Image: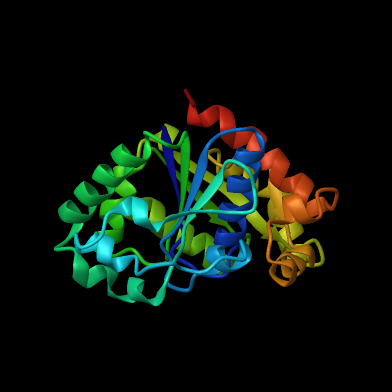
Length: 245
């Protein structure tokens, strides 16, 4: 089994949209997939049309088994651990980085009996507890918006997580707005300076708002729109880098 954390320090960069659609594409490929919504905002849970059936923080405090939080979705091979507001207390539930890493490692070991792939939609915060979670996974999928502040946040994150091996680090450009000449120019002339970027861009699209309205992944709701095609291309680049067994 592989575990992939979808993470970025800056919010609003398409993190949840990416986690939901890549999980849906993996499930569509027949891979038993779990989407773990670890963001107290619960965006991934909302998009899948689900709601929490328990308080996730009870697992982190050792008061509830993880299996009781796993629920089926409408899509074959796709399961969910839903977010709820108890995750606001996530930082207080674990002593620090080491405790969080061990808790997530133990969880992933249990999940490997049922799933081939786990996507974790992380909150946009790099606390010691969240770093512990990141240290427990196999890959970090990093959405990077082509704006000055987002690129700055990306560079900060790369410096903070200097322990991540190159094969684990999977950044990609998201929310590229073709109406903004500065972003188009960056994509055409400067993106190549970031050699680690996956070779596909996710463009800004009104379809992302439609996904929220329909409450299902855009790749299943509207499979032929450009945003869906972009995510399928991204999945084609991500999948071989996971070395799935």
